Length: 75
Image (tube, rainbow, N blue to C red):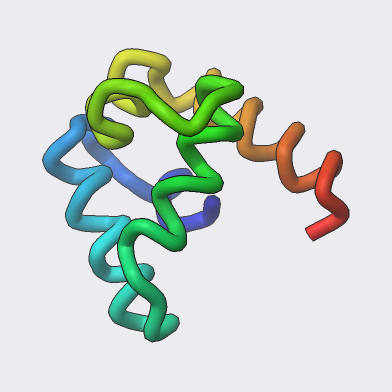
């Protein structure tokens, strides 16, 4: 979440770069990060591209939904 918060430009290109950096840093696959975020954002496991979804939702809604998912799952 903090990586998304610090983005100066909340575009799908920058969001994708951020996701890739986070997955490399933590040694996880992109799908293992993107899928839970997709569920948190859309309520389902299928959607248009997750980076585009986040861009359309915007920073405020994205962060709000991530906060809600984090609280719900206790992570």
